[in-house]
Length: 351
Ligand code: NAD
Image (cartoon, rainbow, N blue to C red; front, side):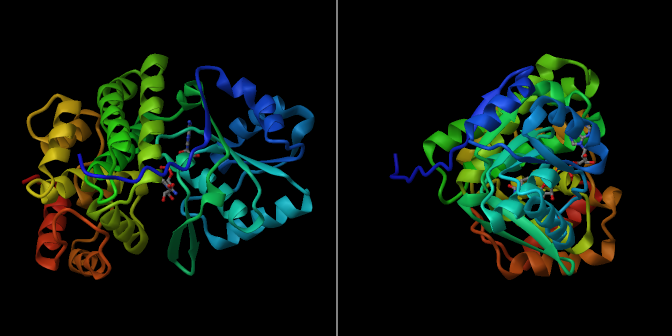
């Protein structure tokens, strides 16, 4: 075995059906008494449930979170936190809401308690992103990592299959790239393999039977593992492409991950055989990239960029941008190879 560094930015994790009821106790454990609850407008109801559980610990609600944390929204939320003299943020929602919490923490140092309701994994990472003048800037700062994460599968029962499927594929993408990252390590690889196993078996059930709490629990467990992987090691061509396509062409986040993943894996197939073997075993298939593609089809998720709003005449620009400052990747990232990958992804044709 090669030497490695294991440097896990840990959060306290409470997992279980009904764990939402422990919210007030966990806030108190953080020493907080004036909580600002964050949510999207669509999840105002979840925010109200959090307020009910917080009782006198709640100072207010900001239910204006939107995708990719526009700086204007971050400023408004920061201002509200200041005005309320908040000493903690409770973020109930997906990556967008948790991202808003991180934008507040980045400036104020306020602790975040996250209640994830999708499978995106942001709650386990020190990665933040803020969008200013159409450009999303991301960075890593341990200060934005939530201090406590409460995973209650019951909160995901309302996540519609059309969002749940791609969200789960987004989580699988974290696991796959974690397996071939230059700073991969044996512990994180165990998390990644188990994350793929859990999501691979649960996602088809989640979309078929959205009320199946066992499958919801399994998927959320996989999402926790995937988020941990993303928070611990670096990412490669897949995430770079998704950031480029999402940022420049405004494509939907989880859907882009779903479409690109099998093609990024086919691109890296020969250069990362051990990682591909682990993915194939976790899914119980022969070819890892094909297994991921088939999983997307099985859960009714998109498999072609042309179906999620990508303009065909933008493929060359995307290939240029993605090869400008490439992330470390098992196979050398060069224009011709990336353009071919993108053309295949555009058509939904896996090599
Ligand atoms: P999201 O947070 O934007 O949520 C999508 C929609 O689903 C929203 O309308 C939300 O209100 C709704 N929703 C969420 N949970 C629900 C539930 N249980 N029931 C009903 N509706 C629900 O989507 P996402 O994919 O979780 O997050 C995407 C964002 O997160 C992107 O901006 C992405 O860049 C970011 N992200 C960041 C990291 C990180 O480590 N920093 C990791 C992954 C994703």
